[in-house]
Image 1: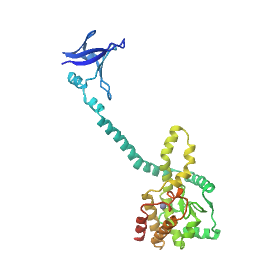
Image 2: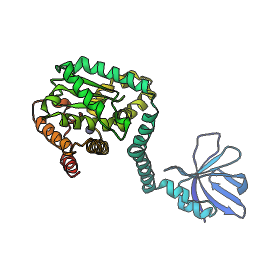
Image 3: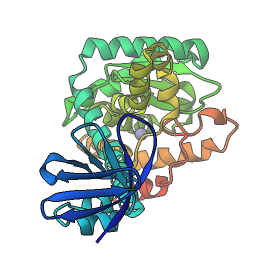
Image 4: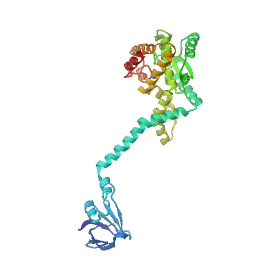
Length: 333
Ligand SMILES: [Zn+2]
């Protein structure tokens, strides 16, 4: 059998149409202006990539291109044409691309939270504290105002938290920061270093101190799980990777307060924080339903005219799809 091919002698760019066939252990190449007879062992065969042809390389630099891959495979049954078939097939290219996307996606969904958790455990306390001071200073400039609560009232609330019996001491906040905010309304949130910020409107919204304690215990659940730090690490990971690539980290650091306000906790974090609060409330002879009461009040307050720009990010302004589920779970404990 003969297979059509194109021959280049390696000296000029001229393409010679030729045919190839086998003669014992030799390749016979025949064209109008060229005839070669070469021992097979002296030839190098390059399998095709994507849509390129098979290439036969001669020792003297000449080459021969064979576009007919089926004919080539019949001519050289020893050559594995499956490689070419795979590489030529869009189906396999598509599959390979899908596999890469799945691996990248799995890394993002599972690998990133895991990496953030491990990293959060290793970040030194002093570093996390200095991050909190920066974030709080930034928030004080833009969103927060000084609390109108009297020092006595602030001391009372601090004392209530201090007197709580906790199964997990890791939940003790590094500090409780009292602030007011026209834009954020009734809210409390945890900073990456474990400081908890509580806003006047939330204190005023509560019917009694048990409800305040319940909400703060939920925040302490976030402190115990280092949720804010993990969230920040996760949210900034893509930005950090980009910054490393571009070589400019200032944007990532500048974005930290915004990330904190806009990134929403996962359901898992909320569930963990609720459970921490429920366990601690029971340990201190307060019904876990007190947190549910407060969640409902905060839901209702959310209908108010707070700045919607931040409505999604903060703990109690979030339009959490599972808030009813959370309330039911707390009531059933
Ligand atoms: Zn929360």
